[in-house]
Image 1 (spheres, rainbow, N blue to C red):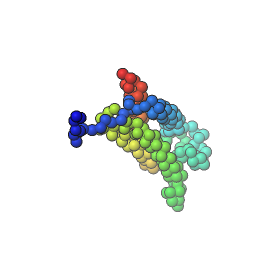
Image 2 (cartoon, rainbow, N blue to C red):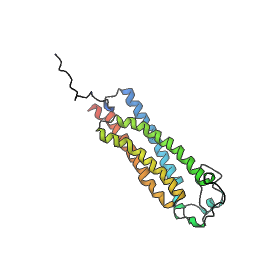
Image 3 (cartoon, rainbow, N blue to C red):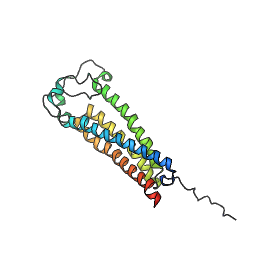
Image 4 (cartoon, one colour):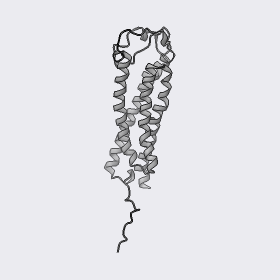
Length: 200
């Protein structure tokens, strides 16, 4: 006669290690694809965000940066130093122009909503992978929530950098660092649990 199950007993939870092989292959392909995308994003951040923040050529500032909405508006200054060192007081603000038509506002709004959708989709997918890790509920909850917080901090840095001070560039480090580190940790741990731990 089988013992009756008590209310305190929980059914065994599905983890990555016990997934059938086709599901493991799918999760591995998702992680690999997102990892290549993150590496591409890192290159773009270096070329389009970090370098222009510290250094930019005089020639690039003499033209109109507002004609291409894929490029961040540049503050005009005669030096070759980037936005972080720009003298914002020298800029002549356009008069009688609503803030929502300002080039900086339009660019930042467009950049923010595109990246909010794109980056958050990465962590929605990674959140599913994280939920299947063989870890405590508390750890998995933090690993799911923190990247979304990091994304919000990263987006906030763009608005503060554009409208308050270029010094808020430094907020990109904790914001982007949080979701990059957690992405790396979850990816490596997931691969370990699926392909190494599961066969031990």
